[in-house]
Amino acid sequence: MVVKVFGPDYGNPKRVLVCLIEKGVEFETVPLDILKGENRAPEFLKLQPFGSVPVIQDGDYTLFESRAIARYYAEKYKHQGTDLLGKTIEERGLVEQWLEVEAQSYNPPINDLILKIVFGPLRGLTPDPKLIEESEEKLGKVLDIYEERLSKSKYLAGDFFSLADLSHLPLTQYLVGKVEKEYLIRDRKNASAWWDDISSRPSWKKVVELWPGLY
Image 1 (cartoon, rainbow, N blue to C red):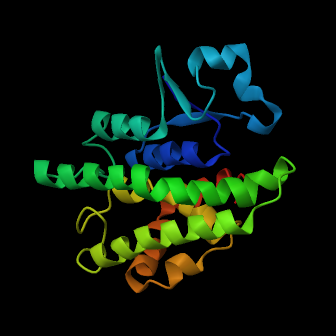
Image 2: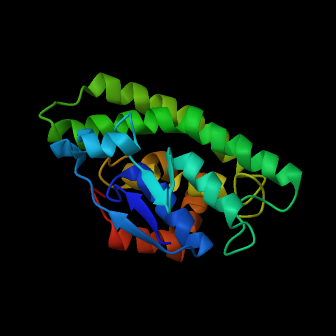
């Protein structure tokens, strides 16, 4: 049974797409136009009661929340494709630690920038420069910690590419693109080298090529 991924043109679903490609799992995508409110349709709300994307259907199994989905497939196909969880329990612990950092510390300020600069104008909203500056400062402080970490290891969880790195791809692509805040990465030597590395992976290049969305 081919996995169905809903909402491929948005950021968070791309976290799932790149994971599936890294694991060599066959899938198909189901477009969803959030700006037109298709995520509030009754049929979709049966799959995702909060009305957000992504959602996957894998046979009779349905799952939502991009990081949960990525963890699920990384575990289900641990011995297929790229090992995204680490080879020891200690490596797995570090992967989970940095996944939490991404979700709790990195994601909030970068998501604020994307919403204000990219999606706000699509809804007729004018970005507030002060709020943008505040989000930039918050993200900069997080990236300072990344810079220190990446001075000690090639990737966040160690010297192996993992879900912790993969999870940063979708929103950082906005940051260096439509958000026009690439300096936040480039001003930090180690973070810049890390971004060049992970964003040049064939899996991510394929995602950006086939589902560019608003990049």
